[in-house]
Image 1 (tube, rainbow, N blue to C red):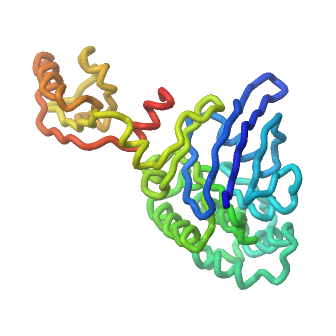
Image 2: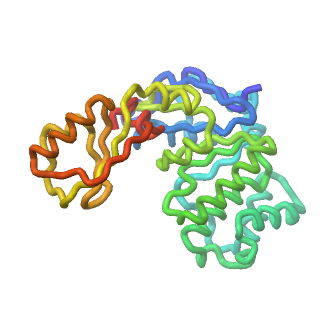
Image 3: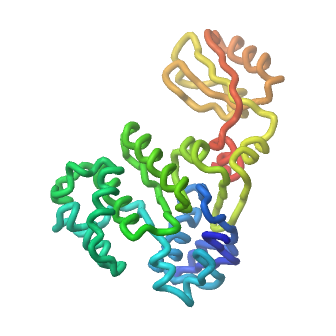
Amino acid sequence: MHALQIENLEKIYKNGTHALKGLGFEVKEGEFFALLGPNGSGKSTLINIMAGVTKKTSGKVKICGLDIDLHREKTKYLLGVVPQEISYDSFFNVNEALNLQSGYFGIRNNQNYIDEILEKLSLADKKYANTRALSGGMKRRLLIAMALVHKPKVLVLDEPTAGVDIELRLSLWNYMRELNKNGTTILLTTHYLEEAETLCKRTAIINLGKLVALETTKNLIRNVGKDKRMLITLNKEFKKLPEAISKYKPMRRGDLELSLTLDPRDISKVMNIFKENDFEIVDLEVEGLSLEDAFIKLTNS
């Protein structure tokens, strides 16, 4: 069975913005699936349609085989959404907020499971803290907990680690892996593409409301081409790079460090360009391309 089916989905807002243009893809039950796209690509519109916040113009959305138009209440119960924006009633403490959220789904006596979630998300010591007093990272964890109280079959994570420290990101992903291993289908949107590359076996990339790629994450990277990334360290700080280097998509990594994307056969040519412009390469490392490179190529970001 498919956990999620998007069929020829269209969304045109009243102001004329055509956010989704015949979008279609499927997520298999039990997948850890990445949905990527630049800002304005239509990701948030899609998630809001799935959650019932935004009405679609046409097309179909099915969750675990149920059409969201025909089975609105059932599909809401099947879905858990961690929104990008932090939003909840700040008048309650953490435990009260989670019990209230349970009540929205008609669940009573949910304290044992709430305690389990709090423990897994390292929120147990904040159980009775007012939500207003939580740090940014703690608020993120609370949003995840709120999305999980009804044990959804499909969990949507919309930029869940934005602004979160490394330690929390690692512990969060360990818990998400555990949930996925136990059968929860996870749809992840993130700007930290290394997360998607590490966690997700398949990736869909959308741009300007259209699907531009749907493939296993490994194949997406493999299909970028024969280019490699070259990491170089120069002997002195650069304020302006040689014009001839621009074709290799230079990216600053620091005052002296730079990454270039190029065919390995062009390495000697690049070294000569720097030499002719009075730069010396003191260190050089060549590595394979990543999901980020595939994303940039497919979306022209």
